[in-house]
Amino acid sequence: RVCVPRCAGATPPPQTSAVQVPARRKCSPLLDSALLPGGSELAVHEWKAVPDIWRTAAEKYADLVALVDPYHDPPSKLTYKQLEQQILDFSHGLRAIGVAPDEKLALFADNSCRWLVADQGIMATGAINVVRGTKSSDEELFQIYSHSESIALVVDSPQFFNRLAESFISRINARFIVLLWGDKSSLNSKAVMDIPVYDYNDITELGRENRNALCYSSELFEQGQQGVFEAIGPEDVATLIYTSGTGGTPKGVMLTHRNLLHQINNLWDIVPAVPGDRFLSMLPPWHAYERSTEYFIFTHGIQQVYTTVKHLKADLQHHQPHYIISVPLVYETLYSSIQRQISASPPARKTVALALIKISLLFMEAKKIYEGTVLSNSPVKPSFIFYMFNYLRARIVAALLWPLHNLAKMLVYKKIHSSIGISKAGISGGGSLPMHVDKFFEGYWYQSAKWLWSNRDFPCCSC
Image 1 (cartoon, rainbow, N blue to C red):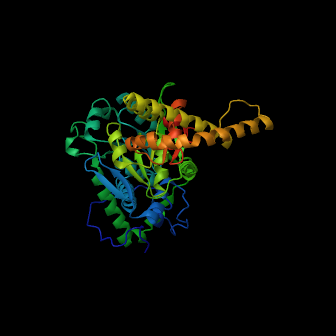
Image 2 (image 1 turned 45 degrees about the vertical axis):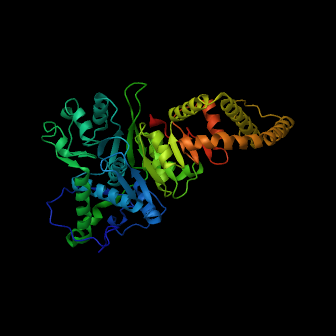
Image 3 (image 1 turned 90 degrees about the vertical axis):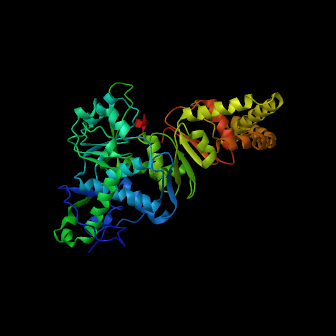
């Protein structure tokens, strides 16, 4: 008898009411390999669907802390092994209530560890999640739900659901509702009178029972139900992300598992993270930019700490993240805050700090010239003589300014680091970063870390 992975030591499930079994079922070929006829021949690093990454991560980084979510009730801290289990439980729970492959589920919620579990749990069933945040208007959410032909709703909290109750819920056809955070008793009872409602624990507990049933019920295997499962393929649609609507009605962008896996497989060239590094996550995960990066970091044994705009400054100092991935506005805000601190210093200290920063920027410009990393709009390639002249001049300038740049690191950048924390890299994307902000952080992160700017490497539907 073949068991679902990770069932070792499980106890036989209690007798429960019959669950709804979809006529056709899909599963992630590596994450749920035992559900496929003959298992899976994939190696641990061969990913065909996004949820496959969790089996690899759990094998390599089992007891490392994967995520910390301090601002939800209850606060959460999960290891990679625990995170994989919760994703498996959530996906099996959705199958137990009848979710079938290629059906669309609207996931309207904000950044949290349970958003990640719900997102990956939906994908692991072969269904497609339709994502948006709670700050969107009721009418926009209704348009997205209707246009995508979603069959159910996964929502953030009772407060958010009750906001939607009158203007939204009454106009949609929802097979069921899943509540990620909070108590079901707080929901508007009139709005959910005829709709089954499950909270996060309901789904995961039902999923555990379903997984145990697959492990211990020989009747299922004798009936050949294991063979009903098909493998999710790279070309299957994983998610629908709707554009901002600045050019009219928001349009749904279909991203396949292959689209997302391309980002996961190639981002290390830009962000050379190592196990144990810590990321601070603040952006909405339904943006393609943040979402692709989150998937990527979990494939390298990195710890993700969830924060908010309100707590960002305190969390930067408290958690001292190695990386932060954000949009230009966040870096502009950090830059403005640093400039205000410098301006508030005594006149002599202010003059020295500004002078050292300016010298640091000149050093970085010279360094880029002799390394050949200066971007140019000119289509004409300079002559060899001109190139060598610039190269030698830049080497001389950089050599002369290098001691003063190091002095700037000790007297200025060290204090900035104690204020903003980030020790290895800042990654900016999703929009154009002002050049003066770009140059400032490039000087700050030189040698001790990196300043990474990436806009082209992410899908353009992140808005």
